[in-house]
Length: 141
Image 1 (tube, rainbow, N blue to C red):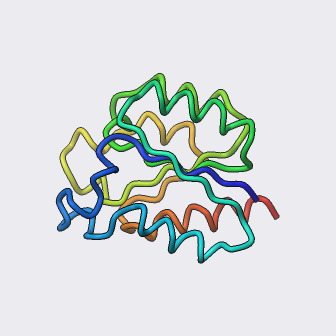
Image 2: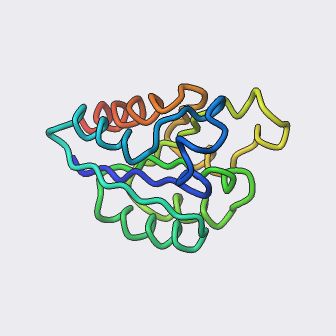
């Protein structure tokens, strides 16, 4: 199965940014672990701090991949355009948040992406990505 992992703004700083919340491992290092955990599947990783680039990637990947794991970062709470992109593609999308967005600032408790995703993993650390991939594989059976 081909699965795209898409990370939004500031997630390029994983391992450096607020390690007490997001951990000390870079996503590139974690992506190697993910790829090793799913050797029979093709995982692709994309990250951007720019909303339009994320939308362009989702529009393309949503027709080429069988699933998308999306951590929209701060765009979760602001981007109707990103939610529209998720709605527009046939690939199922699982939303992931490393931290528990419901236990943080009140504005983080609302996500425009959640309503158009098939599921949400929030607060499981980086393991949420593996859980999301597992769910996409389960759905594909």
